[in-house]
Image 1 (cartoon, rainbow, N blue to C red):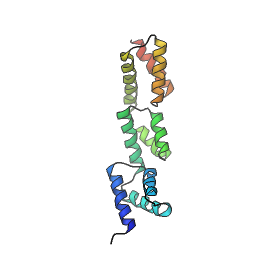
Image 2 (image 1 turned 120 degrees about the vertical axis):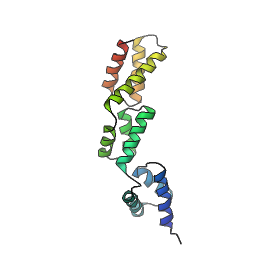
Image 3 (image 1 turned 120 degrees about the horizontal axis):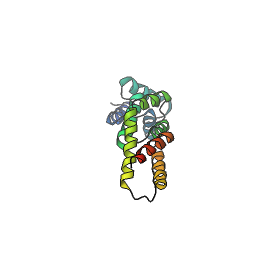
Image 4 (image 1 turned 90 degrees about the vertical axis):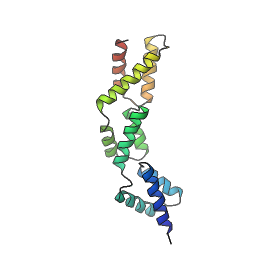
Length: 155
């Protein structure tokens, strides 16, 4: 006969195998099925031991995916990883995976696309719109200003 714990462990392994998960996501899933405290921690330890759960791997994949697919900046990625309970060390490692040249090229591409879209009366309105849009995407203020100026010179 299969025990409740074995059933839960099997379900959580499937949950982790489907896509990378943070420990917080696994804890939340366990809590949703009534597994909390010491029992939840034992299951998490087992998942880590078996390789189903790895915070650094999760952070790197999360950061890379959000950067490549959603074009998020490092500030937004860092904030979201913190919300997921990821350690400072793992966040640092994840952000190091983002190539600096790719990061600047992506920012530049976002700016150029918005400039090409047009529809702005003056450069001040355009700059402000670009700046606010890119801040919301999580890019660094100084970097945004520098690249905006660089791109507007060529327009």
